[in-house]
Image 1 (cartoon, rainbow, N blue to C red):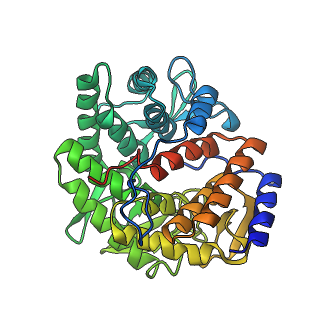
Image 2: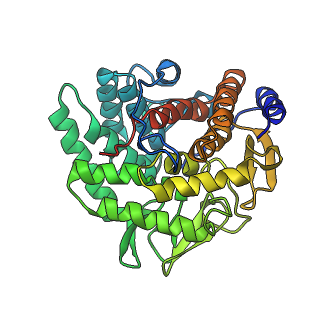
Image 3: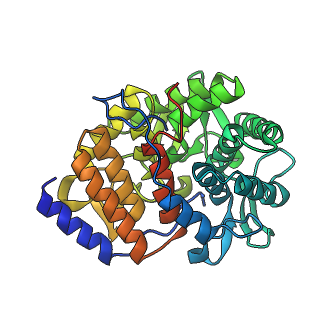
Length: 366
């Protein structure tokens, strides 16, 4: 991408609103596929501190101020991970205490949606939130860690039991316990290869690493070797992934606020195949100034051209995987400026999380 195009893109990002949080109805060593030997550096904590000071209440509720002041389990999981990045062990415990008290059900999973007082509005769990909350608990290092690790193992086991299906002999994460009936409903942005690999190390359960390989295979086939962008939602049936409308329903498939997380998870994964897919998506995302668009068709055609911090971060991750660090830096700067102009829970969270992924402090490639 030329300098003039990037300059225009970043000016556009400043003028357009950033995306509201997606969520369900809701990592690893930073390296391109051609450079897998770089070591993690110290993360920039400014984005983490900004998120924690703006969206985390004193009682541990992570409140989406830009979306009516509600709480989602995704936000609670993000809050714990971001607090860990910032070295705020006390805040990890506070966020988990609120989450366990208000959202955790008898199966160990987390209700997706509540108000700021903890009154549950939607009992159905979201599998990405459950997985990331388990991961945050299991990687926690601080006071009372044995108790949090035990809670994390229970939650991770509940995810495998209630939020996965068997596909061609492999376990695959679906959208939630409600999504397991064939055709299973999946949100590919819930597929986090290096987080899954790390969960095998943390739990001793090899199903997680097996799932990491399986979801990369599924994504590869569904996107035609990354010639297409990943969809927000899809059906999984007979080992085949078929893009759908939102929530697995009718409608035009799109690469939007959910699927934009896929390049981030894949670009900073530990295995070459994940990073190669992310790198190939850069050839789509750098075309026709679509790098900042809130929603695209799977072929990269614009659906919603309004700007989004997450879209810019996803494009930056793909650019880094492709070795275009100059473009990636400009896109990341554009995401930060977009968030300054139009602050949002979702954009602020992903500014912090993407820094954790890029610096190697989320996910492990040991």
